[in-house]
Image (cartoon, rainbow, N blue to C red; front, side, top):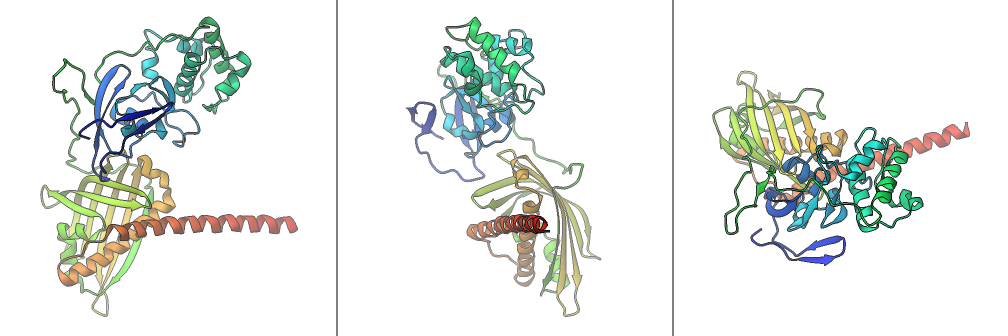
Length: 419
């Protein structure tokens, strides 16, 4: 962003002026004040405020629960009013003043609400506590006259799965009675160094860039534990096995066979930095990372490599991929692909079945690209629209499958009822 978008005050809702479109793999610069410190961060346009607070600024007191604005765990103060951090894009908060639970008070100087929550045992697992604290602060700061009998409804915007509501309501009632004219201001807001780029300084000074550069991976380390999805795809190619192996052995050409993949830089024969864009319906993810060849056997036409990448929105993926080419009786090639795929972050919420189906479809498209490259020496660019249709088809098939399973359960219950 070259200039801060004009903000139009619509009460509790922030509506930024339109800005230029930003590609999925690009970022936008946003400046806001968090707990008294002016900070500038570069974030993807679709990153919500909760992720930026936690992952970019290290303020992990803001908890994320449903990420649909229902549970209230991620409640923060935005320009003095309670707001769901999971429902706000960070780019909407240009110029805003944000207070998180870290800004409410510190261990050495707790806010009265924090002291009351401790005194009335108003926390059990603690997961809802930050949201409860920020929501109760907003209530007592803006509506201090709220009657005690109205507190259950007034505090119903944050859910407690431990059912610790009695202690929570007692703590809020205690503070309301102690401060009938309004709760004291937050005590933890002060200028401090955050993980993002701080813009605080003397007037006219250039902002000091304190953002740590993302380290370049030198080696791929796959996570332990079971994979998120296991993919096995066997494809019949018309090209002879020697030509297919020539494609597998050329990592630059190999990368171009995978839809959305791009080789950015080769460190040596076995380590390559690249970018891969995956579209799942309207959601487009752009991963940057490293691919490392760990096995190359020209006699058996077998290639194994590890890949690891991270999206600017916090999603991460890694995979152990084995490709093997076997000659067939008709002079063609049978190409088998096996992949153990590990997902983390928001992309992991798509579920194992959907992640596996998307991966399978990508490998099927990859096999077609390998066959084309073996025949012609190059591979045509797969259009973005085709990639979107590919992933959207996986999502559609997963939804149809879920509906069929649900219908089967209904029929089973109906039949059981008859018998």
